[in-house]
Length: 87
Image (tube, rainbow, N blue to C red; front, side, top):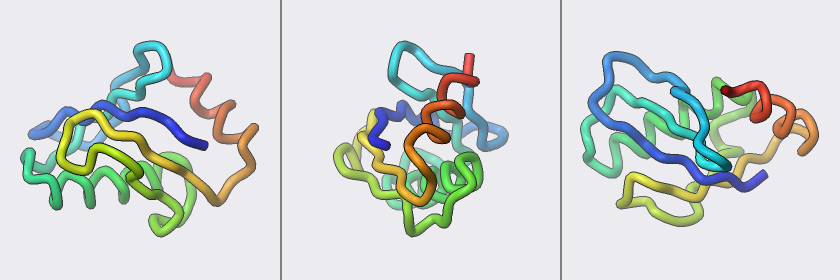
């Protein structure tokens, strides 16, 4: 599954805030340093989607707040169902 993620840095905790269309909004505790926030984002998305962190790949936007992320490790329909459950 490929999805767009909008990262909101410097949050009190890592959490999915919601969706705006097809863009997933995620708060992360890391500052806007690209390496820190990318690592925190990958680890949090792996936990959220219940896949190993090596199955999450940032395809585009490593230095931007809006990123294109590829998630593998679970059937596509399960990932889409999980996405649909996010308000």
